[in-house]
Length: 289
Image (cartoon, rainbow, N blue to C red):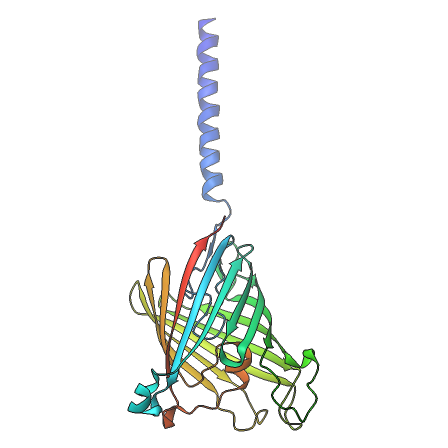
């Protein structure tokens, strides 16, 4: 009986040790984890443009965009500081992938709104994806009073502009991120019969991290061909400064507009002639649930 007990104990120990070795082998040879790229940009906007980043689910982002006049106004206009344009907005994350937003600009007294969905996330490991991709659909509504009494006011639909964007970005390293944004803007109302209602454009934006709390950014919009008369492509450069719950963006740009209709289709400022506006964007996030 004693020999049988010893035999059973030895058998139990051998089985137990074999099971542990087998489990360790299974864990070591198991599926590789997926690591997603984070913080390609530190804000849901590069400067003007949507960035690949979304507001997190349950989070409200209150943004104030402030832009002064052109610096070539000289000392009389205090190099643009006597003039100011403002846009304020609320962006909300329904989920980590789906966000919505509304805003209002004093330029043209325009309201705007958008829906943004993250399709792909850049990742390594088990699931490999070389880029992140999002889709944005939005609209802009003008509310200026009709001032020409000699002409009948057009229907309300003429006040609307729509845009569709595909955001494709890659975080090449912890320092550098690049984003391309092919865009279609449809304007229900155009000033001249020779102007197309549909405008095709390409946005190019990027971020270069300088320190843990400081980065430089750029935002460029190209409208190819002769789609718009007297048009100048919009170029903006600036700095992102993180201060706790705030992201403070300082920038210079040649376009006073701050919604997609304005900075994509209504640019006419020239950097070399001093048509440069200084501005800042201030973002403050609140966790709703």
